[in-house]
Length: 497
Image 1 (cartoon, rainbow, N blue to C red):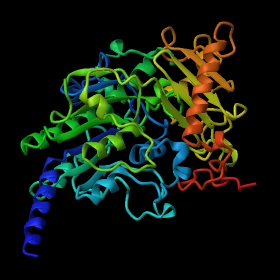
Image 2: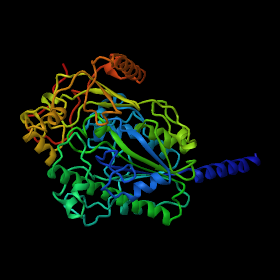
Image 3: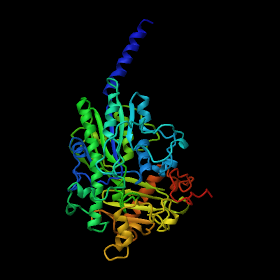
Image 4: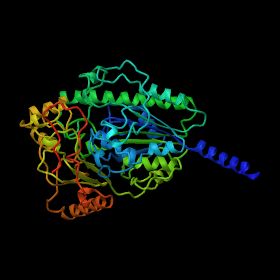
């Protein structure tokens, strides 16, 4: 009996040592930022010293993809480590995240991590219908504000709120913090980019948009807000540096999906689904300063965080841990990322979505549209849209307005059709010659075997991960409640048949 206290002491000492060695996690996520728009990823205008530092001192992922190009579903996938088709209501924006789905934050809390968030975390939606009382990203820190540089930028001092969070840590206490900005989500202050001295002539206009002064200025305004996010990340990193805990902190910088422009956000194409991702962790990443070309999904982060902390990964999490990529410069030989989409803004009568699934490999993107008769960008009739705007899946913007007003003009008509027109049931793009996925070669001679192979691989993955659209389970996404505000008072979700 006298040996028990000694045994207990030894166990306690081991537990304390393990806890002390666990990495902290600072997860930084912007709202609506495409892959190309960081300095290290090649944009000639933007200044992103924080992202560039994390990439240069850690890993830069060149083929990272969100699980869904819409805020709430993408964030649900990140938290749960699962694709959206496994998450029931959480596959829709303005929905809920059922409590039965484990999150990495909850699992870390169970082993003593202090968890917190600031700014935009999980959402938008309602927690209560899913059986939750607290945002799954953690308790919110909201005390600090600042004078924003432009009217459309929130006055939240995200980095200041993180500073308040870490000031409350006990000695040796591990933490997991979600720093989520609302930037660069629209709206923007018109002319902000030019006002900061940015040169419109240096903007790289994606070929999916008309190239004119209006569009270039719109892109500059967007880049200003990306820089605001990056500045917050830079300050947060300095706070860790000041306390001497930066090197044992996993710093992740990414975005929930692509830019809020036509054919970006709310589409599975690269401009909507390919996101910047950089991870720094000197105590855990070998051979830092390298690029990782393996395709990854943001849902891979949840099992990564848990494995890094020595915590058992719940069986329901189907994401792949990135620890293998941390440990070796050799490719993991992962051959594809997978993306899904259901209902976004309520841009069709009866609350109908635009269900599609995509497989993205190094050389190809293949998309299967389950309801090709529906308008992918939302109905052109604003009267049936929850937001009372045409093509309501896309946020209102100067670029969108120009493309609608000039949709029959030479030089714009083809781009407008790509952005707003209906699509084939199957889409196939050869990325070497078509990086923005503008020429659908599905059904064309010479591509039959590639199309069939990618279709087979996609549907095998969906079956393996139990997608109801493939496995024959109940398909409820068109009928789940929409918990957001309804600008259109006549808009409502159809009842289940």
